[in-house]
Image 1: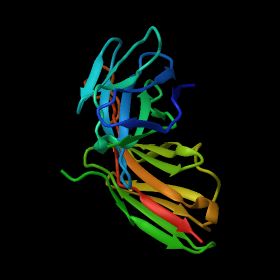
Image 2: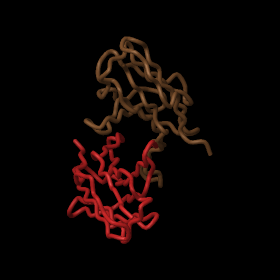
Image 3: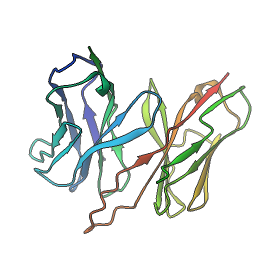
Length: 111
Length: 119
């Protein structure tokens, strides 16, 4: 079956630091890949997505590239802000049409 | 545009009571998902509907849990009787069904969740 593995958190950074959250996946076929973000007390919301190999999704300064050869979709941001503190979920959705989510990675950004 | 609407936002009840959570998906979406989120187990898929029909309910914990979708604009998740271990945040999400060859990638739109506390 499909699976998503993302790095354990929490990730703690100072403001303006570089962020990487690793995500790898196992899936049959060619799934679409997603990063969702969950702010405290809210539901998950789509941050960015990529639908095929070598696609780069980007939004709000965050980026992730669909790497089929390494089955990865790592999330990066060059300079994090306190307001980026949240839980980040890597996910895929493919032929089974049922989404598969990672466990989530908590990001804490200090001023 | 209205997003996914869930009610109630918070529910505190006593063990043994019936709990009903409600969800109104985004108009036009034909897939609906119920998730449960806890610190220990993370985000768990409970049940998935497509065109109002339950497709996969393998995540429903036990017979105390039931879900219905009587029409395209409403779904309920019921717990009867409730137990303290059911305490969690329950999310409803909707999406368009994936159609190969289209631009629809099937991203999910989540409601704000219903926080259930069973004493």
